[in-house]
Length: 146
Image (cartoon, rainbow, N blue to C red):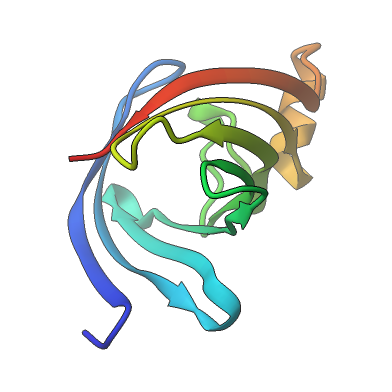
C-alpha cells in the first residue's frame, strides 16, 4: 500500500463458547511515526455483524538482544451477540509487557504479563454469570522468525 504499511485480507473463525461465527477480515498494519507497530482490522460477519480490532506495540531495546515490548489491543463490536456474551461497542482490551532475549534474530524466548478487562455490556454479561471482568495472565513463549 505504502512504505512501511501493508493491507490484509482474510477470514476469522470464532469457536468455543456459544455458536461458531465466521468473519471476513480487512485490515491494515504498519509502522507509524516514532516506530509504533499499528494493526487495525475490520470484520464483517453474517446477520449484519461487524467488529473492529485495534492494536499497537512498541519495541524498547534495553540492549542489542534484550527487548521490552509494551502492547495494547482493543475489540469493538457493532452489534450485541448475547449468544456469545459479547456486547455492542467496546467489548474487551488487553495491555501487556513482554521481555524477550534474541539468541539470534530468528529465535527469541520471552516472558511477560498481560492485564485483560471486559467493558460495557460484555462486562455486564460476565458479572451476570459470576465471572471476573479483569484478570492478570503470565505468558511465556518462543518467537520464531524465518
